[in-house]
Image (cartoon, rainbow, N blue to C red; front, side):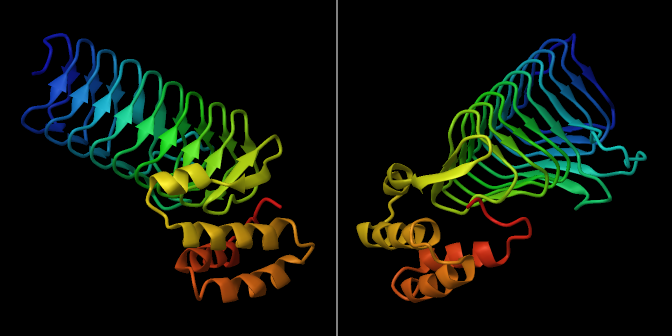
Length: 256
């Protein structure tokens, strides 16, 4: 299943059933789980651990050194889970010792062409990165988030679970879970109702999330006051409790 023109380092570990395309380069310390497909001209450098049933399309550069002036060749790692699709010309870098030492991609993610995921980023499960979405270092992306095309996320920012950004969004602060953001600089644009409904959220939960959104952005309350008001909503909807926790643990502050 390895094309004769592919270059595979003897210190790479490739499981049964992996398909490696023409002119792919697989370096030392790369581990590829069974059932994965590595397209032509893909470059994989290690240490990089790739799980099962992943598809990595042509001309992607996966697991190379971080783009960080403080990096001095330390052994850091990129971890990719199972069933991810990484399309053409994507770049995913390893971590740094200044950060977590690991860049981590979860399971069942779709990363479309020309996307960049920088050092020390933590990406959850079931996310979608539309073409040319880019993360600076140390960014955290929650489960089921969708990044619109050309979305740019500043370093150390977080996008909460089930959030969505419009095309060309640039954010310098955290985007809370369940919400829509758009613009440069990113502004709140409502609740991601369609996404929540597709994922089985109850009408009651969505109603409480909408109330929380109005408290945050339309009530005129200070942030601290809005948080206190949302705590009472969380008694009926634990989802609002997750929203409160996200805001209270934000280092950069939320879009507002």
